[in-house]
Image (cartoon, rainbow, N blue to C red):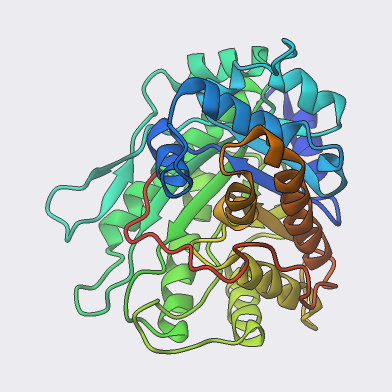
Amino acid sequence: MAHWSKYSEELIATAKAIGKPGKGILAADESTGTIGKRFAPISVENNEENRRSYRELLFLNEGLAEHISGVILFEETLHQSTADGKPFTTLLKEKGVLPGIKVDKGVTPIPGTEGETSTQGLDGLLGRCQEYYKAGARFAKWRAVLKINKELGLPSALAIQENAWGLARYAAICQEAGLAPIVEPEILMDGTHTIEEAAAATEKVLVGVYKALADNKVLLEGTLLKPNMVYAGNESGQKNTPGDIAFYTVRTLQRTVPPSVPTICFLSGGQTEEDASLNLSAMNQLDAKRPWSLTFSYGRALQASTLKAWMGNLENVPKAQAEFLKRAEANGLATLGKYTGGLEGAAAGDSLVVKNYVY
């Protein structure tokens, strides 16, 4: 039976194209406040022109399309252009890179819980998505945030239910408007939990998400999943190897994600640039059934070295672009299971952890 969305064929093509071997997503959808936090350590003023100039640096990169299949944009960036007047969406499409758009409105506390949140933005979402489609976007992103705390029983059943339903409603609305939805139920790395506890919590969350997607009649072939990798909490004292992370992450996905989902694009979640690449590569080396493309949708783990090289100076643009291409190549190789290290950039080993990360 045909799916209800008139865009079903396009949605399927988009979700599949993003997961093309050797490629992944650049998450350049930092809000105005978050990009300011990225600019502060390099002493760059957070104004519209500097934000535009920095994104232009990324998008004008000659080798961008070699390892990048899609770019998630913030709403401001969707409507910006290069210095000579070419819309960013046009520039990206000419390079064969699909523009995407962050559509959620951030998180809000769930009353009666231990600091758990749900994501806002459903009101008026259909109209906004229709406008984003007209502006050139072809996929969208909505981030739900969950926490692990064994003593407090987190994530709670209520938080899982609320976030799964929000993700499913968002996904259905996006598909009605022609945007392939990235479904992002992020479990934060904050905490003392073990890798086994992280796996159990991630399984529970993903089961809830895919039940809600089914209830909302979402076309899974026209979606992408953006999950956390499975590893111990950053305060656990437990250090997991790439092999450990690969085993628990892939096993969790095998137990929960239908094979009809074409592309799983991991978030970096505060991992160092190098760890994010090595861990993804280990998953793609694993001798296990993987019916989906396992790729990346990285923000901090693609841009930390780039920002450090740029420093807001025009003369540093070529150096910054070279740093970006180095990380893009590392992650492109990782999607093929072929990255073993050696492409470290200026910030490759720097911790990118932000506690209770919001953007």
